[in-house]
Image 1 (cartoon, one colour):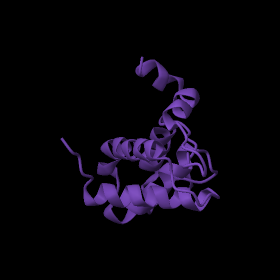
Image 2 (image 1 turned 180 degrees about the vertical axis):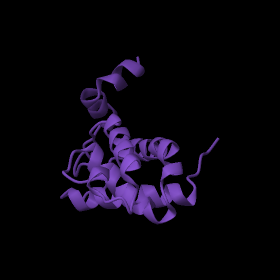
Image 3 (image 1 turned 60 degrees about the vertical axis):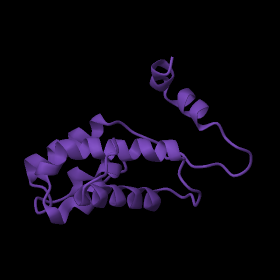
Image 4 (image 1 turned 180 degrees about the horizontal axis):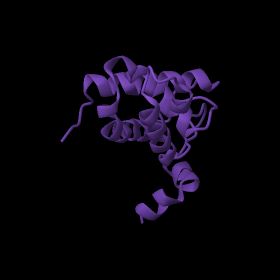
Length: 131
């Protein structure tokens, strides 16, 4: 079964990656495995948060998810009530922090890189899950 994001979800995902490109200084393409993981995490976050987000706040929420989960000094907590409302803003901040920090992984220039080996090294839970 193939799962296709809704229009709202795709807008959120696009904004999330736009924010990554803004905060990171790297012109290489993302590692495909890491990029897929991020899409899955965006969809998981949206499963919790979509009902709290107005249509005109979806893109900002995509940016804020990246900023909040990685402690960039801005994010959900930094918006005024016109975006999310105080209690929703605080809840979205806590929920994004539960996803934990992530570091953008890029395709390396040069010889083929074993991204699975790199991910297993950097994320021990992947190693345990693949045994």
